Amino acid sequence: MPVVEQLLDLAGVGKERLQLCWVSAAEGQLFANYVTELSDLIGQLGPFQPDNFKLELAAVETVLKSTRIRWLMGMDRQITEQENVYHEKMDSEAYQAMVKQAVAQEYEKGLILEALTDGPQSVREIAGKTGVPVYTVSLRLNDLERAGQAQFHKFEGTTAKFVLLAA
Image (cartoon, rainbow, N blue to C red; front, side):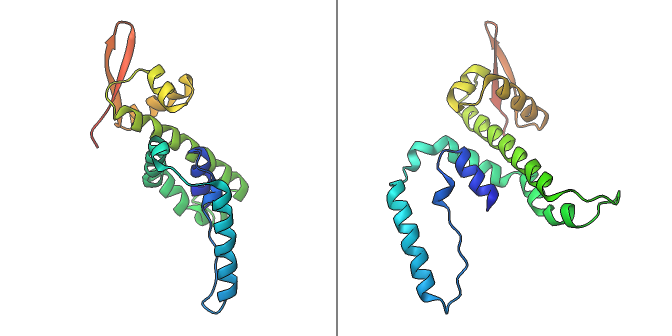
């Protein structure tokens, strides 16, 4: 849940639109109260327009499919509660901070990958479409090239263009 909440905030959708409440079948009134609270909240937030968030939602989906994030989420208890092969444990807060940073990086890469679906793009064009700073686009393109997901295509004048590689 914290990862999805972070992604919804990064995407500009807002984590408030996601709620999880545990209620047993015997707690009908509690369930009704939760539904009323959520309905009121959504009413205050207004209708969600998914067409206004196509790029961002595609990036969120990319992150949720990311091997890196899925691995980190699956290793949470192993890394924070049990010892690794070097007999070390990682502090839970440090681990969560690392996951948060990884999610942000994967989201930036997801935005870049989605921007590249429109064809060859320069770093500045990608930055303009995604809102990711130029320097960060350069860093993430480097990551994507190493992962075989994007590559340099050609120069147009002195401007380098990059393309998406087929999965």
